[in-house]
Every structure is written in C-alpha cells, then in structure tokens.
Length: 108
Length: 115
Image: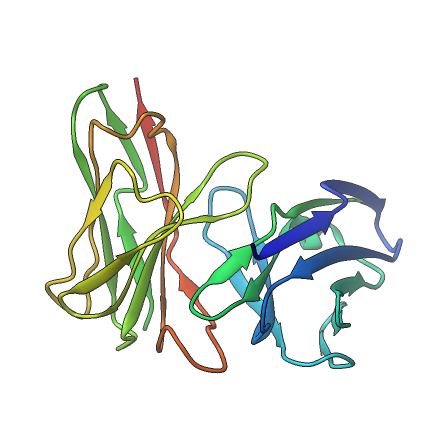
C-alpha cells in the first residue's frame, strides 16, 4: 500500500533559524512528489512538484529536494509569515497520497 | 479570476440529516476530487471524477455520495450513514486524473459540524 510519512509533526523555530522538514514515501511507480502549504482554515496552496531523484526546486526561502525514498523541504532564514502546515503528497497511478503534515511555527 | 469555490465556509447540521457541500471550478479542468481532513491527519480521498457523468470511490467513500452533471460542478452529499461527519472538507481539481503530473488546485474548504 502506498504511504507517505512526514516528520516532525510540529516544529517551532526562531526567526532566522534554518531547518528541514522530512517526507518519506513508499509510492509504487512514483510519478511526482508534491509540496503544499496550508494556512489554518484554508485550502492547501501548491508549492513544488519534483519528478526524479536529485531534482531540486526553490522559491524564496524554500528549497525542495528529492531522493529515491524521501523528500526534504529546506527553509532558510525563515520569517514569521512562513508559519503554516506543510503537506507533501506522492502521486501514484491515479491519485495523490498525502502525509499528515508538519506544523511549522516561526517565532519573531 | 480562475479558481475553485466552495460554499458555505461553515455548515452546521443535526445528526441524521443529509447535507450537500458545493464545489464549482472555472479552470476548465476535467478531474475533480473531494477530500476530508481531520486534525493531525493527512487528506483522505472520498470521491473523484475524471469526466462528466462518471466518478469513482476513493479511500473513504462510505456514507458519502457525489454527482457530476456539469464539468464545472462536483457536489458532495454527506448522508446520515456517515458515522463521523464532522470534519474539514476540501474540493480540488486537476487537468486530468492520469498522466505525468497530477497537480491539484484546492478550494478554500467547508467546515462541517454535526451535533
């Protein structure tokens, strides 16, 4: 059965303190690894799609990387507005399988 | 602006009543999806539709029903058979269901509370 696991469940950082979020996956025939940002009470907002091991994508303070077993979302010098839940999802044959998310809090 | 709309944002119902959640998209996407989100859990797929007048069960379809009479619309009915209906419901769409990229666009969600 396809599965996606994110760690940690919650992470609290000081403003400017860099860190990484982990997404481990076992998705048969992975066709894409997606990262979304979700603010409280709102729908997820698309961040990145990664297709093959070794691929990296960046957007502002965020960089996503992909290996054959996991993906990382690196956040560099975060600001309070980066506080949100970050979801990753692996694309199988016909659907996305989501992890449970990492709730990130950046303290000023 | 193109996007997905869900209404209402908050919905309250008494136990035993059926309730229908609305989802409309103007992105001209073929595929539409319904997810359920509970605290501390990932999104779980309820139903999805690849084309008008066709839909498939997801992982947790019991107690739910859908229709797809128009490309733009994919309403979800939460029936009285759903044992734990209180949750945050998200609608999404993508260009297609199969292919190399399933990038899904999400609506703002409907929070359903059943007492």
